[in-house]
Image (cartoon, rainbow, N blue to C red; front, side, top):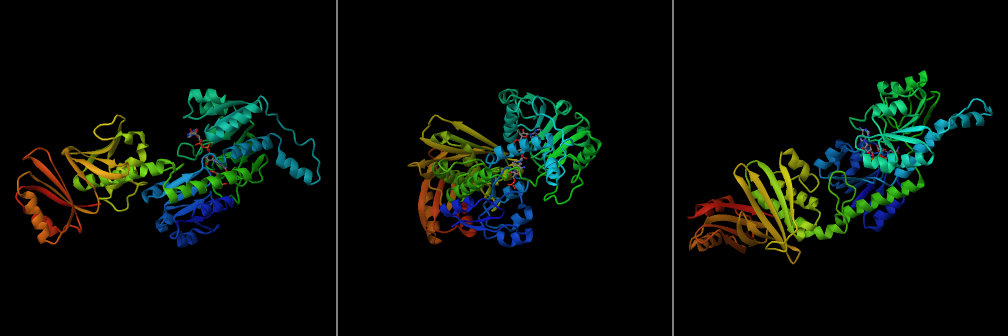
Length: 525
Ligand SMILES: NC(=O)c1ccc[n+]([C@@H]2O[C@H](COP(=O)([O-])OP(=O)(O)OC[C@H]3O[C@@H](n4cnc5c(N)ncnc54)[C@H](O)[C@@H]3O)[C@@H](O)[C@H]2O)c1
Ligand SMILES: O=C(O)[C@H](O)COP(=O)(O)O
């Protein structure tokens, strides 16, 4: 039974779903990295929010880990390249807390406009300072949206409902989408110059780090109010403090900080500054959403191989998984066959699906071919890291689809291009289930690729099969199945034999010494 660790505070629905789906679950929150390292080896899955840092060091100790599930959106607390290279799937729940976070941004915008926290503190202190707190209306003000993705677009929708004008800076926002959202797409400088309120909704990347730098803040309208419910690091906190002190910025509300937990900050206590402790996603509704979603996604993966919302591997629904399963087995076997038979650097590998196979999601099939191919070079490869390893090794990967059926109702062909030219193998599924090789380097041959095998290329001549059989018999090697193909009578022939034990180097040398043998090799599947 797969075992999952929930290492951050999560709605109890997550544990309930894991148990209902046949996954054992432990909830142990608040562990230090060293404590986590000591126990992580026991688990197949790790369910987290933003507190647990899934570093390379933790992953090095996660010897059984197959999946990290983030109950939320941001995955900057997970070392995704390190997870990918270890074959660990990383998934998040990209929509479950978007409305809640957008609402928090709107709440902070109101709080800034009417100085709600200060007014509350003053009133509860018995001061009744009615004349101190003069606010501003939101109606007809301009909201500058930096980042117009899921959360940004919900914020824009709510702001338009408040009769605000919304301008958006997002290099990936298409003009059509801007029209659909009812926002004006602008440059960053234009946004800075025009916005009365600025709200940030981008991930933290090399391009967005300090997007509100001292220089950018200097370009804003005097008295601008700034909200950040996305990620710490998007605003230069020292520059923001200086701008609040100088009055260039009239108010700022941060839910996220460069360092979290933010227990001390020069911003704390600055007039016009409001903060919340990374509460953007903290509503009952959002937490139930993300808990259910992460547990379902992780259980799907651990129990049936379905992949949803993964950041480092193509998606594969739980419905698709059983249909694709025999194809993945075929793909892995063909990839492995080509990998074992090819020497030298591979320039390109092409995966061609034909007939019924062409109707399927090609990504998992490609990953399985690459995993099979690379298994010959490294035993740490799997479906998750195979595309990354192939890229690291400079392999060009091509996917080709032909919906029309050829000789077979369904066919998968794997071709590799090396310095010696292009060669391919092809296979089909018998009865839609059983993987079967049908072509090997241009020669028609029907074989089941399983267990230990002997591959021989020889000149087609009478008596050869008898000599080979005798040699194997004398060596005590039992032949299970025997498959034969040839280019033409008297030409190049290929033999694939399944044998009950691996062919020793000594026996292989004797096979190669038989008259007419061009090459011979032991294979394993
Ligand atoms: N405070 C919280 O508790 C909380 C909750 C949920 C999400 N978040 C964070 O909010 C952020 C946004 O989440 P989302 O779901 O909307 O993500 P999203 O991926 O849907 O949207 C991000 C948008 O940022 C844009 N973008 C990327 N680079 C940019 C750049 N250089 N300049 C301008 N725009 C750029 C993208 O094109 C995209 O439209 C994420 O960082 C997420 O982690 C915070
Ligand atoms: O990216 C997110 O989903 C938010 O930052 C929420 O983080 P949390 O789950 O720790 O509240």
